[in-house]
Image 1 (cartoon, rainbow, N blue to C red):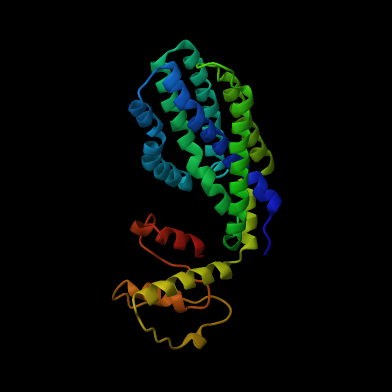
Image 2: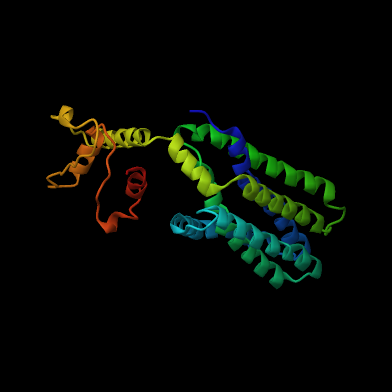
Amino acid sequence: MKLNYKRTFFIGFAFLAISAFWQMYDNIIPLILQNTFHLSESVIGVIMAADNVLAVFLLPILGTFSDKVDTRLGKRTSFILFGTAAAVLLMMMLPISDKMGNVTLFVVALGATLLAMAMYRSPAVALMPELTPKPLRSKANAIINLMGAVGGVYTLILISTLVGEGKTPSYLPVFIGVAGIMVLSVVMLLITTNEKKIAKQVALEYPEQEKWDHIRYLMGLAVKAGNVDLQVYGVENLPQEDGFMLYGNHQGLFDVLAIASTCPRPLGIAYKKELTNAPLLKQIFACTK
């Protein structure tokens, strides 16, 4: 199994756009707040921390929501498209309000921009793992991080070359440059990455037996963590072909671990509806038949 470097490179454009924006946010916004609006360091600190506060509450919610959404573009791509479009439009209000000296408009535009960025931050991060077989994700992650570094360096070059002299220079050229790379990145992603098609290809590249072997490994770790000595009999009686059904006594929850960690053939699991959104369990169920 080999990593598709070309596909991973194009997927990385989503992370490149995010990194380009945050590099600008961290470098330019504090200067505007301090030099244009003359806010104190404590107030600037509170405003700059707003993205982290939003991330704590919004990213898990939006990530879970994108798990359940299925559009023509796929689960993640639609969030990336509309989130980027909203962020680009809203962020252009920041240099305008800076030039006007309108702190209220600036803060409102900044808050709206952060909301737009939060809309697609989790889906963008989740896109690569979903379109890459699990054993290859470490290599793919290196490429994604490299793309993010390219985005950050691009913004730093814009800042060093386009920001003029003086205490309150115009930052509009930098914002235009970052907005441009964000638009270009999402266009490249849309042209080159068909999320639904690739997801189906990955499912074929990463066979069901391999998924089940990973599940068995995880379940085995859970059994060992519980210091349980499992004694297994009758595995040889399981048919090598066609289907079969296994029923546990269900005297407790452990029988699920016992069966899942010892059955060599992939299983489908029947479970109650309440477990559909249970952390860890829902990911395991998604890998079963």
